[in-house]
Image (cartoon, one colour):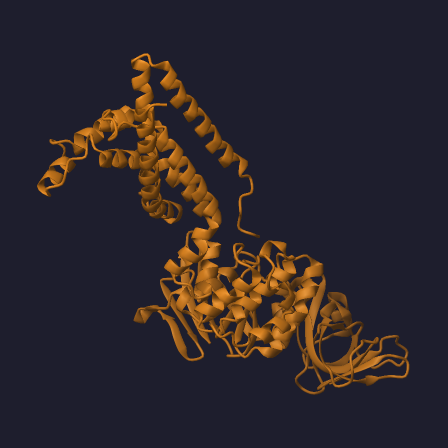
Length: 356
Length: 224
């Protein structure tokens, strides 16, 4: 899908261009006030900009130069807001039917499957006021999807939930990720959420998209680390390879394998992991006498000043030639070890977080 | 209670019901516009709607009488169209009442629309509801408490009007003689017994209406 919107009012200008794959979740990530929500509202047709262009799956929804503007209700999109915006005067079932009926899905195609996917079958007769925040948000997501949208826009759907509810709803979003074959734009300022869910990421700052790319690529670019502050780190797609006799689990990926303390998954399961830059240290030679289990040979691609004072961020490429890691070291170590691009060294990974 | 009192009560109920119905029809679009517009005219229109709150009813009645009378521009237009002139008719009373009770209907509905906010309408649009569809399927049901308040206040206020009726409709029994005017009549003729019946009834009626209104605490709001 292609999107380009210019809109301005006193003190704020949005001039954002996005070109995204037709499938997968794209996280729109940026500080508050950067224009994330405005961009989303433009795509939905809720804000009209002087200059705007939007095409989804080759269909033009908006092209102001040619005077094309589909109003919101004519755009086949799903919209999920921060707060679950169920209609309070309708039951859960009526809420779900509201959109289905109007989107020409009166026969309820996919209705049963959706009830199971989001576990809301038991809620059908309930009133929105009687649901928990997480339940409401699940119903809101189901309601949007039952209109069979060709674009799903989600504006911080978890932001209004407490941590417990967030953890309760994330698995559903992950399931959705596997089921959906439409582009999803997901606004968030939580890098954890983004790292768990997104395939692509678009960074937005002061109303401009500064960079877009795959999640693994963007998160491990040292130059972009400022956007993520302390949360910079690499994303690894791994496969559960087997369990060692002592209970440790081996996760295989293209650049080697990682040993981590037991997780309850069967072999062959795909797991997305995150390695924080602050959990990676560097050594010039391999040590046998270290307590660190995961030591991966790597080459320095780039090294830059880190957003945290006195630190540098090094981007490393593993032996497979594609997997990227990010390591945060002190400026003193950088000088002492003379770490420069091209140097071959050993990345010592202190901990690995399983995202999903 | 004598027959002329009953006639006045019947006439008053008829007037109030008709006025309330018309006001809901006319007032809803005005309230919607006031709640949603960014026009510079919003203030002016809002002020005009609210005028009857502060004007003495005689002032409103006086100008209505002039405008609708044989020398007024509306009166002459109606003459030209071959229509009956409105002063001293029941229809004239309805017109006057609609104007006079306007703020009591428009303001609660406007408040209700404003309280709903834009979000439900945006949600409805994202679920493929056209603006009209969304208005009827979302805005109206959500604003229901506002409509109940508006209808109640509009009805009660019309029942209670006096000055405008006297100016516009005079005091014609069975035609324009409503309750409040009838009471005035009785008192002028020192018929306190009959006046008591009607006046006491009005006190009870008004109290009951307000009790109903203020007692209805549960206001269905937009869930967050």
